[in-house]
Image (cartoon, one colour):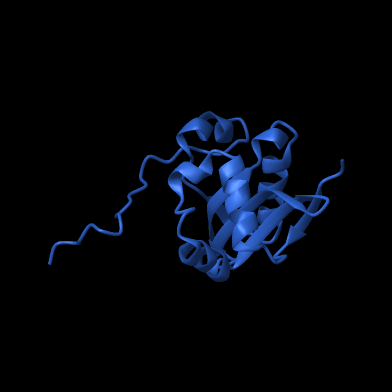
Length: 138
């Protein structure tokens, strides 16, 4: 079946959770907190989705200024559809939405770490994360 790619098409929280569960990302996302999932969708300012008929089979969800930096916070492809170039196409379409200086930035899931190198992305060891329950020193 053909894959239809859509930019900023509506995606429900249930559809998003289903594709997160069908990929490896559900382990690291709050899939049991639908209010959080809905907020993640509502406040992303760039989504590129992949559809097989009316079923969401892939999504690239980003926060970006469209000129310099694009944080691609979720790249999920249903495991049944992986290996068909869907993730690569989602990233390419995301990149096409950015200005000439816009770069993609992401944190790779452990299982996908080697995937990005083969796409020509560069590993950057300077990423830092402050978990929500951690506090900055005063």
